[in-house]
Image (cartoon, rainbow, N blue to C red; front, side, top):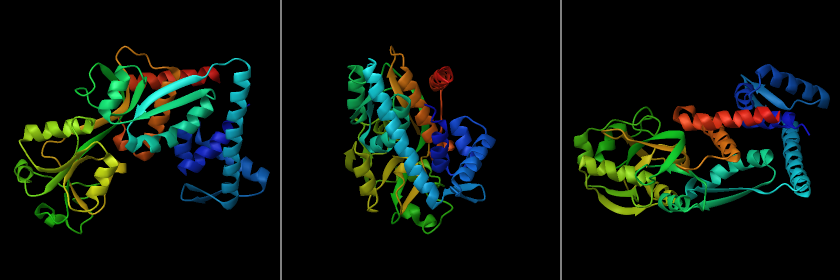
Length: 336
């Protein structure tokens, strides 16, 4: 059963752009343009509003999208039942993720993964970095989808996805924020201000909340930087719970060092580059002796596409990642 045209409609709806949809689907833009034109002629209704290259669903388009999604769900259920009847085994995928990103990531990769592998059974372990690494080492999971630190996770390798800078955040009342209050061009999340080492070492008058270095990959890097810089801040709290950290920062009473991921952005704070810039890398982490499965190659492919939609400036694919993408693409070509 060929459902490629259903994927065309869903992807155009999600991206709002023929160009981005064509890149994601690995087809040419004219193919998608002809598809939309033929569909609208067939239905006698406009499915999209065009506005300077942006494609937005009309009321008819929203109805059609709901139907398309339901058709895909029924198709997956049907294939799963037929494959079970013919003796196909369940394909299990056991992965570890941080609680902070778990829900967001599952929502992005599970539908296309299930569509590609109807017999998949997905088991997710959500925990802090240290606990996830222990599960990986004991072979309770085959891969991790989280931040990486070689010191915290020895004898592993990573197919990298994104690299984020570590940023210093200060409450707006702090004197270092005075030149940037009310400005949108500097001292913001998207355009951090600079700090000198002297300014950084002066930050002993504000309470900090930090990622815990014993359980968090980001915490390891932050603790390492503080030690090397020689700053001993007043630490109000250490936690591996990123949600709690963000909520406390939003009160405007504390300082911290955070990962500059768009999902970690907190309003009404002043952002600074560290005097010596530091970075964290996220990706799929495997044991050194483990060869990623076909399903894990496709999971990585979906994660790359999702990361690219969020912002290509953070995208960082290493050699292992490129190899997984090549394998996924080859499997896709063989199936077609």
